[in-house]
Length: 165
Image (cartoon, rainbow, N blue to C red; front, side, top):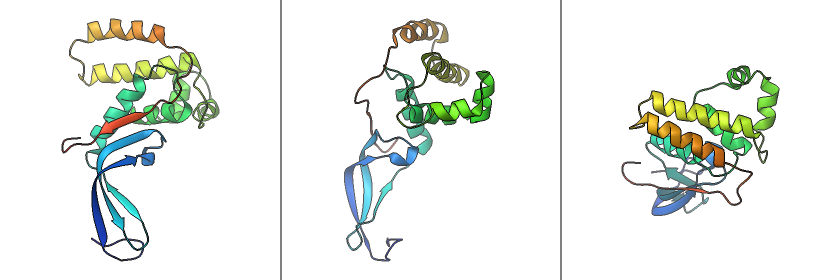
């Protein structure tokens, strides 16, 4: 395999940790990724397969985050739900400009918007039949939402990569 930058042969490294910033988040770590490295120009290229399943896992981790969602996390979850910013704004009876402000890096989502977005995620999972017993899950979900408070320090998502991820 040749490096797309310099054309030299790539060396295969395995079992590496990869900060998956390509998803738009700085704190998603894939553990056990195969990485190709160019010994000449030091260019690194991870081999990431089953991206849809990977994004399912990231979305689930974000929806279960114990504190309020940060702007980029909310943006990831909104996009995962295939909601355009203009449509999300319409659902909340606000403007796309407000959604854009909420989704800035480092900005915490307003608490009601945070809960609404997580509830949309929950409904998506119920609709896709990803939950075994939606009635029990719904009552647990509502109880869990009541416990959400403030922000969480050092939130990190680590996903072990396997053949089936």
